Length: 435
Image (cartoon, rainbow, N blue to C red; front, top):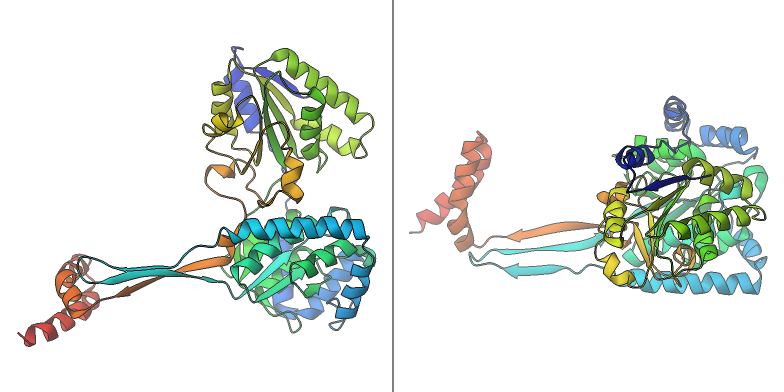
């Protein structure tokens, strides 16, 4: 059973703090192992990657077979049913249209001193997209990572997707094709992250790495950050549903289970202003767990990390939501827009009873790569901006330099940076000679 909390309980603050402090990440001490793998790949390149792939994925490759050939991609894509293809194409179209609106604008102006200032935006040159393999092989993640990169204008996109025992998910390859990615390697784990960051004879290095992965992948992304950019270190999935009594308990139960079924470390929380409704949702979860395909995983997640919190009113619910800063926030209330205005920390918000979080995972349009573990307090979900960088622009006319240069010289001398000061002074002296 999940924990049941109420803000009217004397022990609520302590119990709520305990809930927030749960360590849900099932991450063994992998850093030392990952450090060794990265060092091995840096030293031996393809040889190390191939050996590690055989060891962990039970797949024997050569440099020539590390990547899927165009014929292999075409053959796998042909295996996809027309119905699945249509669903994937709809998702790709909606994701592309949404992210196209995120493109930032260049700007340039002349200020009162006569200086020309501004900025320009441009994409990173190359990006590596990690796609988990095996049971956690999700074509939707391919679309969510690759399409924003393509919209941003990234020239070279590389996918690393492990295929344990040689098992391939054709939907992953079709998603890659729909997103315009043709460079796809069947390698995974920390060795794939190292290859993307440092390069091998077969795999050219990239500028940024995005995409989810297990504890080894997360640890590798931490270690290569600085050499390359990364999107985020994603933790277990989480959902917070704020719902009033005028909802179907079974719908809310399914929404909670939609995240619980991801893995045992996922967390599902319901906040409601009606205790009886909370109990009805708990009963509905128990009933659904009797037949759910992934009931073992979802059941452990719900029992170990789930919670139902009863509040006095929805304003109190919004306050608690901001402290939780959830990855996914569903607002199933009479006026979800008003409540959304009060919830300032969330990775993604889903408004109304007819907007289940699962829509956002596939076809809604916004990205489903979102901040977890309360990091929505200071970060955002994946977007076009993750694949772009801003370059500032400045141009001084002689008049502009004469107007603001003396202050720059003075500040440089206050910091004891003589060459800084002299570089400005020399130009000011030249201007003064003409007087």
